Length: 161
Image (cartoon, rainbow, N blue to C red; front, side, top):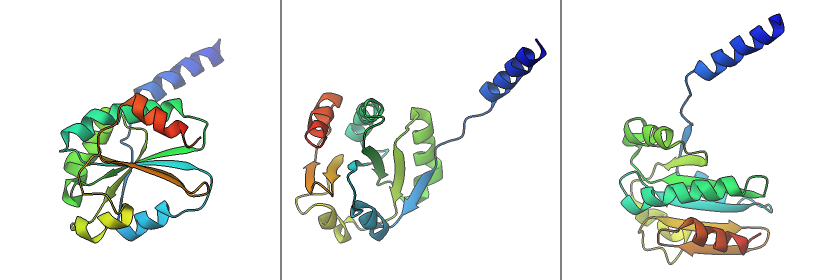
């Protein structure tokens, strides 16, 4: 009986503990480029977005649902915020926490998109949301310069799995 009470007290403390915001890593484009070039058989879904972009914000829940549905598979979701670094603590971190995003979130600390856009995809005009799905081992790649629904994202992802 004492163990059971101890268990209940421990569980209550854990449940009462404050939840901590997911870490948002800040990186420069060369670091992101290195990550995009990693060899391996993992399929990556990289979504470029911003807190001020209405269509981006609308599609994020769909990305999170698809991410959860792909648990256990060799698929990794990375959300790359294009907000200014100065907005990290004021907007990006609170946004990520409020929406409970579980995907890896990065903030790209670059002020001139003209220096890196074409290196991500030669056809990318710079509009967001922009999604890149790729698998380096399979040498497969697809890009979307538009919002995606969960059904659209799932259908595209199936082509990689």
